[in-house]
Amino acid sequence: MILRHGLCGGTGVANLVRQQELDVEVAYRGFCFQESDDSAVPVPFNDGYEWGVFLNPHARRIDLFSAGHTHTATVTVKVWDAEPPLDTSVQWDEQGEVDFESTTGEVAVWTLTLGRAKDVISLAESGGQWRVRVYCSGRAEVERVTRIEGVAHGVEKYLLEFWPQDA
Image 1 (cartoon, rainbow, N blue to C red):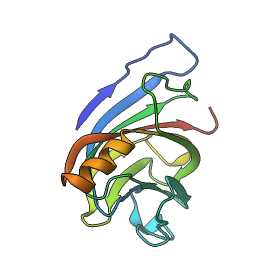
Image 2: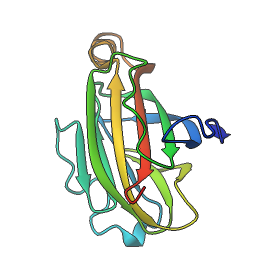
Image 3: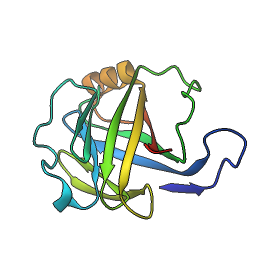
């Protein structure tokens, strides 16, 4: 995991607060970002997981559907102090936006086979209401590689951008 703080300062409307790079082990095409305090999640992962839905919000949880069966996805998480401009650095295959509530200010990654990952994403010092924009690229290629060749690493890429709803 790479953690960077304070990358953008005062040059635009939104300032990047922190950024993390994660390798997420995807199995059965699914993983999620969930409130770190598991007891605050009314329906924990993978209950209510919907096959084929790219971005599916639940209370204090966001499910993602991958195009590849079993692989390691590269995930970049950016936390902003206000709504960032749309990312045009890559030609994204999928994009969506949802609301997210955190009671602690921390988010954990969950996978279908491994459960909770060790990496935690820090949104803020305490809980709050967030908006999150999710992008994904490499979907056709990861589907092909995992179907024909087996496990892939870093073929499918995700970008998640969180910002406070009251910003």
